[in-house]
Length: 109
Image (cartoon, rainbow, N blue to C red; front, side, top):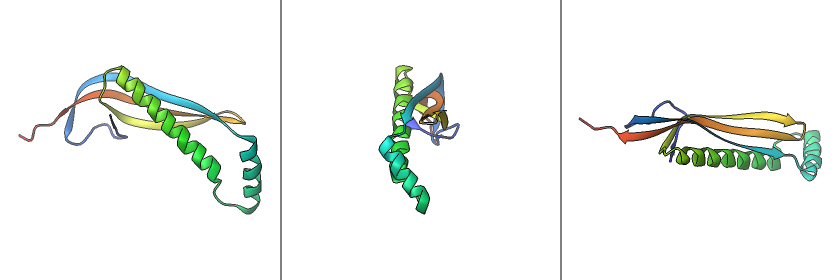
């Protein structure tokens, strides 16, 4: 599966647009992480547990995007975007979305 943020894939033509696809996950905070994050706020710096949690959530959302695209028979997703929103004070949603397409290799003629 080819995933790009652009509206095209270099060297390929869009053969067919399969439609909008998305994948999302909701991640909640962890009490233990919150305590450590509170301590980190006192001295400053990166909160590595949250960075890791959000990276994992993005990967999960992209994985679900790919699954949705495969269900539509696509071999690529173009114009991919990621969005994060707060659901509650303790949880965030990560959404990946884009346009599922099939591609054909551009002839060099």
